[in-house]
Image (cartoon, rainbow, N blue to C red; front, side, top):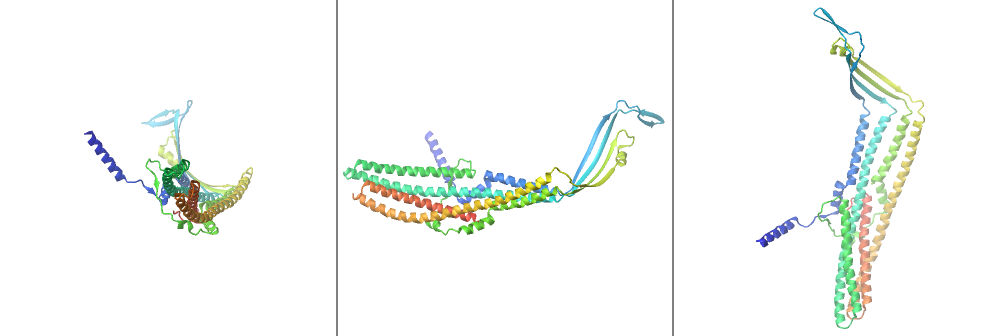
Length: 448
């Protein structure tokens, strides 16, 4: 009975696994889309952008008049009052002295700044620029995350192919070791030489394990970048990256830089910072100018010390007024001049920041271009070297089997082949990555 239950449970578990299927394999575009939607840094930048948009709405509302309603109610006490309020009831005069009394007032007030040297309108423009800069900062963060994803993704692709290369080397080492054991039995090889072959097999197996370990490490980093916190296995889609992908034409440095100057958010952000500094100068200068404001109010009041009814008092005490205020700054302890000078200094700083961003952008693009060109040349050379070393190793293997080459020569040839293969794979994927990053800085989407 127990065996039957265990069998049923095993079948159910196997069915669940088959229905679940293999883990999802993430493409580069899927990784980017998911990160854009879920990355915490991007979400924080989005909140900053929304906050800046609220500042714009606030600045717009400050161009309009303010309107407020106020009311005040108070109870007073006069302990030594002598006179009171006389009333006539049925021909009888009655006098009452109220030591406690009540006062109430009601008012509506309006104020409107008509002109203050365009300070309020320039503040609105400043807030609009700040909102645009927040959006550009969001784009900067998104670009940075996309670059990190691409770098990790390509590193995994490279290591995945490196595992295959190490596996082929391991299989070759197994064959050499097996052949060596036969030669030892026949007395054609010493046990010391066989030990070297065995050591080479173990080293190749270690290289496979190390490459797989590095793949797991980079997958973990990519998973963390995507803010994936579940326990499900994470894997990526392995596209067919051909040698032709690494041999495609590399865009010119000038074309990439010129395109980046007009598309990259960090450059646009610096340009907006210059515009903001110009507006800050105008805002600071406004403190030297007169300001004009209008005000108006309506109000009324009532008190228990008056014999009239509440409604009559409200009507009788009704009051309305309008007024205009002209404020002319004369002496301000140099605050306006200091503000203007500091705003001008900020403009100079913004100009320097733009130059620095342009310099950094050129340096970054130049680095990608030099790496792409250098790695492409390395790839061409390494590819030819692999073909040469492969032919040499195959010949050495045949000669070793015939006893014409010793173990040292065989292992040296195999090491040369593996080094050339690793160089070819590394230069291949680094060329693909650098070329894609150049296209990305040119304004094109990442695609690997």
